[in-house]
Image (cartoon, rainbow, N blue to C red):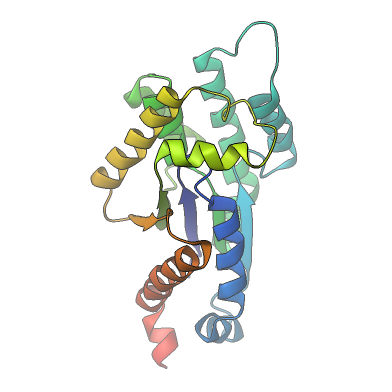
Length: 227
């Protein structure tokens, strides 16, 4: 049985990385997942991120988030760098893991490109969809956990962490457009995107996420779990 791709999405400061790590730990301790692992159905859980989930991607991540050249990075150049990172990531990491039956928990994926480069930068959405399809070979998430948070609140959180990366340094209007992009995507893809209230306390957010994922786990593997 192929594995499952579970993606965390949201605006800056929504808590994706923290919640991804928390879900990984909670699943490792889950009786249901342990049962699937004993059966060899889900051999492993893998955590990864975009950009930067491969050796090539680490270099691209440094460019995308740390670039400080005298001329600003062109929006189309930014889009193509993200697509290159994703193409390598899918080919080297995600698809092989899914083929083995593993679960892949990924920090950002195709929806981020639509929200940031499409709604945020104003690039053509049809072009972005084409690039995403080329980069992924048509691979879409089985479940997308959208950590829903007001953009201004998220940016305030990032300021508490210290130095901001290139994306975090964009103005509030940009991040509000990104937020609207995620809202639109959630409306367009209710079959795979589940909204999580990321304004709640960290523990409450984690509990909501685990409840959602456990429900999907039961749905996806019901024959194995009831045997």
